[in-house]
Length: 476
Image 1: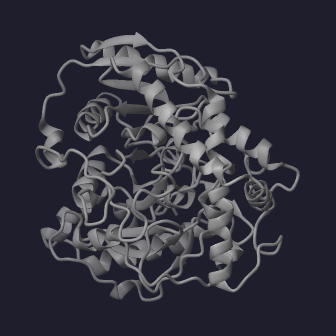
Image 2: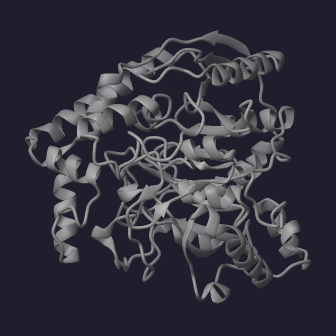
């Protein structure tokens, strides 16, 4: 197989070629390394391509048998492998625990070949850090790939691997999916276990999953990664059938709530609004009922979630374990200011946060209960240039200013981390300048099946597979 062929295939196709004996897993690993060597110096998405990648093992015959995979440098862990969380505070850290996520990845046939960039502590929408530098967007290197799963998104968009690990605590999978032209699902809370040591991480806001290029890869990944484990805080409703079978099931007629207005401080770009309206018209033509919806929450409530005293205590514990101190030499400017701000908050604030979460879940649930799915922008604007107020390396930004800016631009994503509902960003549109525009479909809690069917319908009606970023392996 040539590199120019490898980058055209999604994970499902590559696995089928392995099963048919037309390509070997080792050959796919070598092609991923070749792709990495060709494009990574330009996008800075992969901080480590394992020296022993050619000997990485996985199960025989899984849904993604032999398919190359990459790990985001925060969240789920591989025992003995570096995980530095984009931070000098964690430089050299090697967890000794294999997350259930990666046990399932190997059982599903995936071969993890390296780790991708993330902003410090995965806390910003721009993947740039003092430790690892700036990750460029393959569609426009002067713009952000998004965050915090920006390295994963840039690597998949540029063709290094067809699928990669991501995680999402406020939009961190969906944001880079939107800005890099990918499929990015944030599953229902509890669908993917965070065990054995990160169950219900971050007040239940954070979920692990993947970034990929096709809806069928998303469905297959759900079959690989979903399922309860001992110690999980709760077990949600389980699917009636494998998720890949939903790809051949009828969608039926749905009640669709459409967001055509801003839900936060950042105004909705006219090109993004046009994309929403075009998708709403398409859904209506498919037979669904369309109704406009108002913002379902108060932005100030969402902002309160991201200045918590527990942030300070967890960083202090980590610094002690690493034998380091929290200073400007170990944390970036905004991270240090957020630490100092949260350190001075009373511990009772952590209890208050539980009430904020409860109130948001209730208010949003009441506001959208009448709908089967929602259609919203993923982001109110297209990918932004590097630096500025959204960058944690910016010394001029205060903790309060950063949180206000971040929650303002994540106005359509973070709310569904709070409610726990599944939501997927689909690359359904492009700007006049050729930048991807992602649109978000939100489902009822525990109902990824409907999202798969709707996403399939939209992919068939408005295919995106022939769009190519400026930086892509196999082009030279």
